[in-house]
Image (tube, rainbow, N blue to C red):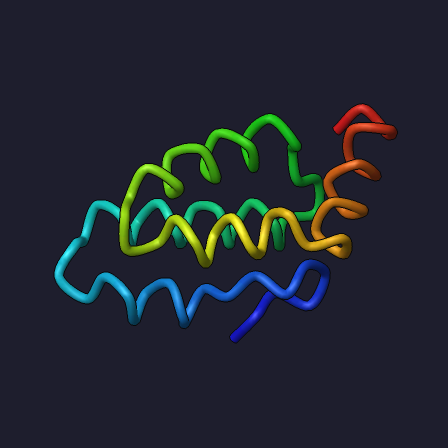
Length: 82
């Protein structure tokens, strides 16, 4: 299910890497960060950078991250110092 604030496609990303538990943990960590009460832009960026290194996820992660809704959310975090 996508994260309501950013449309994060966790299910789609998990489906792309069914046999990679380490990367699945990274997807879950990013999803938790996005859903937390005080998400940190630096943590989100770190997770995104790592997930983009995975060839099966690169396009989907980049499309999500570059989406204007996601960027507005990230910029809002940065503006508030989170």
